Length: 408
RNA sequence: GAGGCCGUAGCUCAAUUGGUAGAGCGCCAGAUUGUGGAUCUGGUGGUUGUGGGUUCAAGUCCCAUCGACCUCC
Image 1: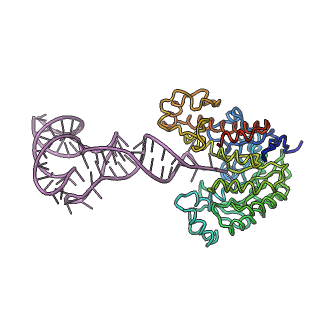
Image 2 (image 1 turned 180 degrees about the vertical axis):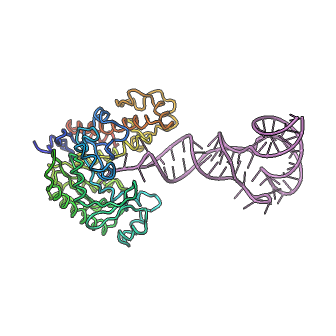
Image 3 (image 1 turned 90 degrees about the vertical axis):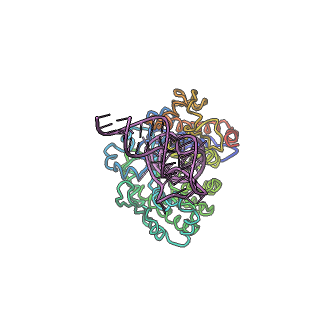
């Protein structure tokens, strides 16, 4: 029994069907994993997640390290026992927080124009840019990253060694190398500089992982490909990371503001250099069209906050919504105030099976807590099961048809 | 009954000595991709209670009227 087996390949694209085996159960790929940053998929219980078909969830190292702290989680024998989830878990390495607390923070603030950031990065060092922007909470150096907690401002430091040691203590089934996610846009000089650093960190992450002897059960470690939107850097990164001996791979640094076409190019530039027998995870994606495009290009795993975040904000997936509206409708829209039918007649989730759109609309307008739960339930169900349908379509040989049906 | 005070957007309120009526919230719409249950971006919205008058010009000054509130008898 190997960690990952490919059971079927699409003959018209790079799409494939497989199974990942962990001590906490199997995962059928392609798979979408809901994000439970703080050891909880917001508003949902583990039973909810099982009911709607989730096979694996993502937890975040940065958040759990800061709160409740690794010690508390260790006392439960790891993240599974702590959150009452006995199926597989993947932990992020904290690398993304280097981005979201650091330079990426600038691109997320609409005030800072993209070209301004690009100019800054061309003209100044990262340290100089950070000095000019006191809101930045993280600073990267060759050895690791120093950051301030978003909770209390206290100073902390992550290195590849520290991140992996924390992840060993958290005890997820799949853990990630510590990387730097560069903002978009980044000039080539910075992207390359950061890439060398991420590669160095990948080696150190893997070495640290090999030293870990006291695993109660098997932990697999994935390396992360970076390289921004530069195809040659992506290829360089995939060759390097692909050659280190990781159990699987992530493609990172996407969905950070770049055009979708650039993201697809980044996937295409990376996949050919990654061992075809190992699973590939596209970090932080995502949108329904992106999932189709990525699976077609050989991606096996996805995680994204969008179904839960959008669910809490009333943006709900709908089988009859157009691609232009990203397959979603806004339940807060005026028309739903009086709709006695369920939100989506074609949906089999708990929410659509039991509640009218008008009731949902009311819950959202009244800021009732049940809105978060019913909305998240619906959205996660929608995405998880769409990916299951895609999996089946690959087995049936009609994946291109299904993709065309959705994306035309 | 007498005196006082106030009526401006759906709501709470702004608007210099008279000079193009604004804000917050709400409402409507959009954004949201390895999560700060957050945030951001637009948009709709008014015969300034009503009717007269003074003035080049009135939310603002004058008169009447309707309504709310306060005090006193």
